[in-house]
Image (cartoon, rainbow, N blue to C red; front, side, top):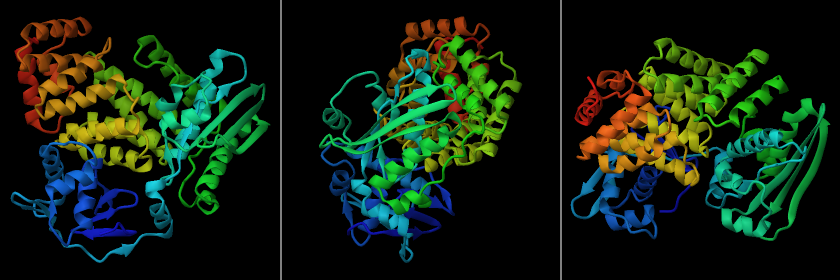
Length: 509
């Protein structure tokens, strides 16, 4: 049965095959990419049995995959849709068993997207060159590049390559056709930035990577105050060229509200460019975000980024008072109040709702972040972490893996800690161990504690004691109860399991 431009409705759920989104009573449901593929395959073949072999080929084309992977996705779907939604035909396969309502046509914009969803124009934005001659100003050109990537990613009818993939080529002279092949994209955007006092010059070019020909190019000489209008014009022109002028007029995207102060924006770019895992750099980034808020109290993003940094103190310092978490939570809430249309703000608020054990709100905001910008690997990874802590670790693991599918070069320490936590909750300690090893940084207390727990559970007693010693060096007052209390598991069984493993590792009571 061919895929059509319809929304499937059944039992309070609505599945949109174009946006690949499942809604329950109008609210987005967290569902991994593989589970969604399985569900679509079953619904589209709802008139008949679908064999296991056929499903494996449809969902994992060309790959050798164990049947257990399919069973995991079926189990995840049944937890969400109900056990009767998918019928098992013993020894043969599965059949979609829910009663499907009448198909309804999707809106015209979605239909247009569906027509090209599998052939969406693929595009990569290369790091804009800093033409000012001062390497310390690279952060400004990098920040503009990231803003263009973020804005293009909002368009579901474009396949936008991640920042990490393109920034590997920063400062390198590479043939455009070769670069297109390496990144797997049809179009490339390149440009440059020069600040000249109160003026700015931005050049931007859209290149067909197959032929190497220039599709569009323009130079903007404007007052610095018009920076955001220039960014918007660049995005608008690219989308209009690749997707269509009608959609580019605003039918698909809501432009983020720009900050009212360029000085505040500059401080946000400075803070974002710093290495947050380094304590000194993290402190400098905090000051940058605090200064941005002082300059422009109505600018939502620095509230959110400051919340993330303040929250790290709570996560990694057992002596940090409860007020530290409360401050991070309040900043994250304020960020969403000021910038409701900014996906990063929802993602970070979801993180601190989880820390506050407001599990339903954590799920809502984390899902909202992914819904607003599904091409953002940070949003997907954070969603996976939330799911893993609220008893949906299998889905969380899939969402975390989705983040790496979106961006194969996405490897921050907190990502590996999240992946390890999902595996730990699923009692896959051998799989969790290497993830926590990759996620350990100089002050990552939680990663050290979880690493010690995994080592002990796997029988690596000497290694477990060594990691406990490292943990106590970071936090001399660490105990089993204090560490478990800082891990926001919804299921008490997960907390008990962690406590048992920490005791086995030799962590003080």
